[in-house]
Amino acid sequence: MTTRTGVCAAVALLGMLSVSPAAWSQQRQRVSFDVPAESTQYTQQHVIDVGDAPGHQLRVFEIHRVYGKNGPMVDGTRLKESWTHGLSDYTELNGGGQVYVTYLSESGERIYARGQIAAHATADGGGKTTRSLAALTLVGGTGRFLGIRGVVRSENLANPSAGSNTSKGDMEYWMEK
Image 1 (cartoon, rainbow, N blue to C red):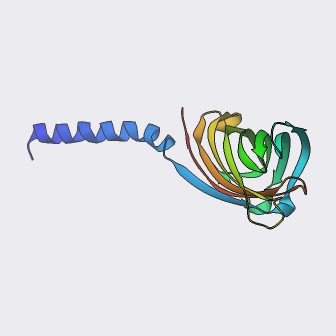
Image 2: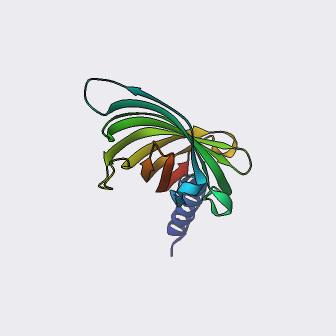
Image 3: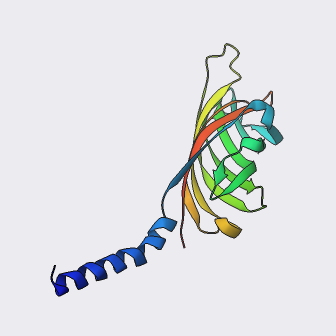
């Protein structure tokens, strides 16, 4: 190896090492969650019958979920609960909506997300259950989560009139500096 080749290799190695910490900080991480109905509560619901079609309702709601001791780990800290605030526009439990979610960690830091839901009534015989898919964007947070970005994809099974709701999904995230 010539001196010039050795110097070029050393400069290239130093360049890669100096870039690596920034690249590491933006590596995507993925966590999953599964919250049963027993750990989920509708804390508020306000329903307005629109009146233009049978079963057309606007619903403003708040959902509290507790993840428990096996909650997902995000950037080294466990999520303990989340609060979802949303608006749905359903006809016979079919339709869409907008949600805003705040995830709280055991250390008190927060992650903020917002997104859309699409729902359809299930064939449960009673017409009271809906299955929805949510696509959320992580938009930031507090403390260590200030620069968090990413997506949350979840599937929810709900009976809003009975106050029952389950959620299962994945969070893919990275930290921006």
